Length: 296
Length: 321
Image 1 (cartoon, each protein chain N blue to C red):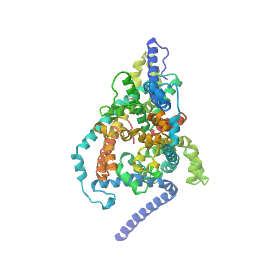
Image 2 (image 1 turned 45 degrees about the horizontal axis):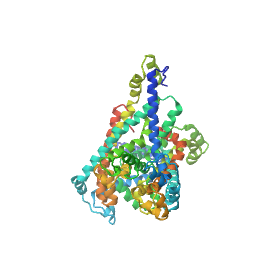
Image 3 (image 1 turned 90 degrees about the horizontal axis):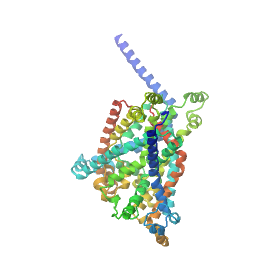
Image 4 (image 1 turned 135 degrees about the vertical axis):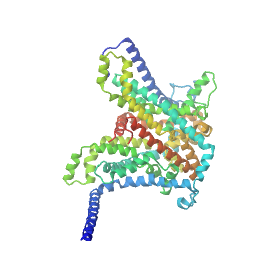
């Protein structure tokens, strides 16, 4: 695009500097994650020998991971988070689609009213406490559903999806309706097969949100066995209590493992799923995000 | 005769109204499946968004859980008076505005810088790799980011403190030090969001007409003049729009991040409106008081966002709605 036909010497120097800066940006993004991983596998004698400063450990140990998976705390939290992510995302997708599809029909009576009603919730909310009271009144406190239902539809995601549906060619649907195809059938047989990209984007938006969710956990859950992963992780970092709980089950570990090893192993376990799927899905995120900024 | 005519026109209007209603009813009936599809979503918005808006009335009552919303006594503006006579509110408003402002000032430039540099890179695989890596952190949770900060800044084992000790300096407990709190918030915010922030600028950079650059090269414009005369004007509107939107959201200082990073020792510089509401409401169970503060914040926020959108439209941007 930016056609520079020939490069002067100073151009080349500038280029070199730019490449260097970008490399630093990339390293700055990667290094903390790498460092946490190193901390999670470095045995205490290596840490002590190097005065606490280890970037390339000469010896690794997986005891930290073994310890957190042997205790009941982390597997239970992972179970809650996986359930919320899978079931929550599925429900998000269903309800959001069923709302966005009719609203993409410009001739629908009352469409503008409903749209205004939904967009207004992006601008004003009753606040934290009234929401808490509603969640309490609807009997969701201390159930996994408190982590799913209060965020069932994101107005922002719904608008992105509606824009996508509006841009689909209408003729195919019309043809199907002439052939006696009802609205539901049209949605499922015609529209959805054409909507794979937006569905992937939405699944990722919602899925990441569920995986990373922290607030719902501390607001609505007081039963420790229902804590999602992020809450357990935050508690582990805040106090040594959870780490202690892990360690007392296996006292010999205290000799070999500094508490940081356990904390950082838990961090890596929480990052890993995101890290593994991320390279495959990141292009959808950008597409979806930019799609959302395209207004009708 | 006249009377007869009058009734006739009256009847006409009536039947006209009836046919209009009937037509609407027919249209609604024709779309009945669509309404049925929307039902779960609309019910969700009514219960979990509009019901809480009604619940705001407890800001004007002495709410307690046993009596419930309707049977708690009205107290008028008592809670608001109490709030605005306590020093807490001014501290939280100050912290909210300062943290938001720091985020705007220090957060927007790295986004722009990264986008501008990426835009200069012609080697596609390098560009794509850097992009993929730098916006990865956006997808990590604040708890994870806190954990990473912790691994660097913890007083005993943190990397920074280990370095300080090696250099013969005293370790610093960064995370519980009120002087460092805002800096840590903004730095981690930049770390998490810069790569993703650059995406928006890259999209508008890609939309600049390449012929402009070609013409500039023919006219003998070097790299810096191209940047100054073509690239920067090309993204000025996006930058202004983002700036205005961020100012519109100045009352939101990043609840989740601040709450996760916060501890009692840094309330002086770190306690924002949202964290105060959360603590007073859900930890001290002062529901009415917390709701009053939340309501105050919501109204101010609404006015600011609407104002920001008007402003964005005046600047020639398209606004957000």
